[in-house]
Length: 417
Image 1 (tube, one colour):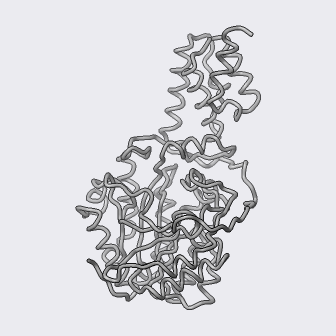
Image 2 (spheres, rainbow, N blue to C red; image 1 turned 90 degrees about the vertical axis):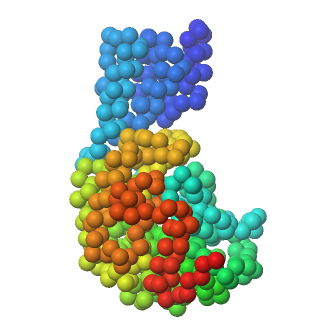
Image 3 (cartoon, helix red, strand yellow; image 1 turned 30 degrees about the vertical axis):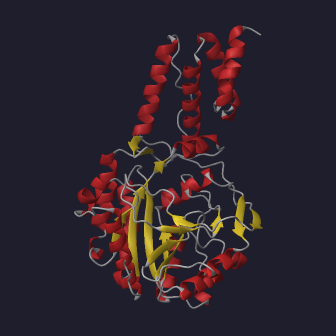
């Protein structure tokens, strides 16, 4: 074994080399030996080749510039890579071919340490946050959305229920002199599991015992059977994460269709349950503004503003472990095919793209202004004034305005201490 043999084998150990198609592996190996790429150069080439393959874009073999120095080769490939990454995606010819027709789950029920009630895991003073409290009723999700951060914290095929969840909720002591906004959709989808292990029984009882909470169920499911068959406490709101059909079909694998989500929301609104809608993430791609506008218009035509508690907006924001997890997975996705700017230590769209998408969304909902609570989820403070024409000076100010609005919609008393 020569010196470069050892260097090459050592270099590819911490890369995505083995994920590439065999012909690409053979090609890169040949070119690496030919040009004696450094570890850093080889790592970048493999990373770009892996991204191209995941995005369904150019093959690294087809764009390889021949008869050039190693440094120039890397510069040329990087230029093409950045051009592809920075232009709006097209899903016209995209085929998310490596998809399961159904998710296979392993359900685990165990007595977990701790309770799972805490602050939103992505809360930060560097972005405007509503101070949502989260309740981890279930851990891990089965919808397999490309962009989801849950996959970085839990095994996708292992769904965990806390055997003592009901007992813990029954013994939870809340301050009666304040109103709490608690969400159950941060560590899993709130509705996709139904009442498995008595989770919904426990949460409904919790809401009935504690009239000073607004309990939010957030979902991409159409599994509303339990809600339709039971009396729903007035301090429960049910919210749907929505997207365009393009994003749902290509990136929100196994989740309910847009029509089913909106239909489920309509059914609960007919029963008197206050509903809400999250557009998070809004994703930039060709003709995305028009496609999102069609969804916004559908909601305005389908619901009265007094039936709707909230419309939230946010976009793709990644921490490094999520990016690494996505690149390690054997699936097709364009979700990382986007320009990255720093956003409070995370990777997200440049500010001008965010301003475009959020301003467009807010203006599209003009008939609901002043009647529904609008907010940006975990976005830079400066975007509020630019997109909404108003802003909150602190997270506490946003929390007060939000919870007060929800209480008014649900007919519950608002207590702030």
